[in-house]
Image (cartoon, rainbow, N blue to C red; front, side):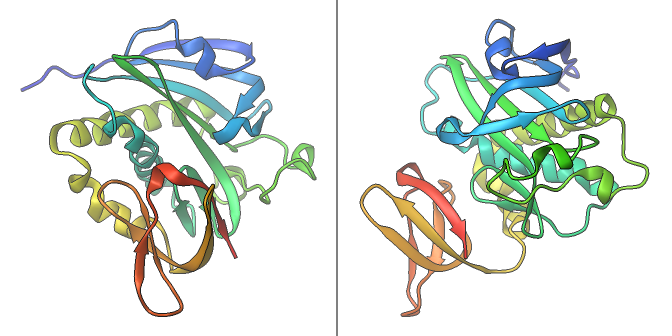
Length: 242
């Protein structure tokens, strides 16, 4: 039986980006800050990280030969985030492909995975927990949600950071040992009800009903003609819910 993994915790009051700080630490380290001044999402979109939220990055080990598999880590992290939320019973929590966690149509959390070296990936996660929603007014594309408005009592930020660390460890190791297929049953339940979306790529935009993903992480649409179309995940710039 494998020895249990102990996360090494690094905590600072303020950081530009926890993902940037995490680059200098080893796998199975987590870096958390109280205020993040330059957080980012996909395509360098701004993430506002004020006091009271969880702004954290988790380093996980990779095999040097890993190429495409690490690009599935936003989905693995999304499943872990849902797993960590389950005991707190946040209603209508769901994933939005590939890296957002929503409550209904409001955004509770975002994920950014980067690969700072051949042997490590950094999973950056921002979760609105106790931070002020008034401070976000007009500054976010999606209406924001926060845990404190759905969970009573809301867990302490440091407590939830460690609950999430355990969930990431469990789901990441399952993924490494058995591939994405082992997490597909969870993913099939993670999206909520079927939704009409527009998938934007550099070449074309596609509209249809999002019904799930392929094992390689590509979104599947049911088009109005009735056919199914998988849009290669690496070509997708945005998935917009209509």
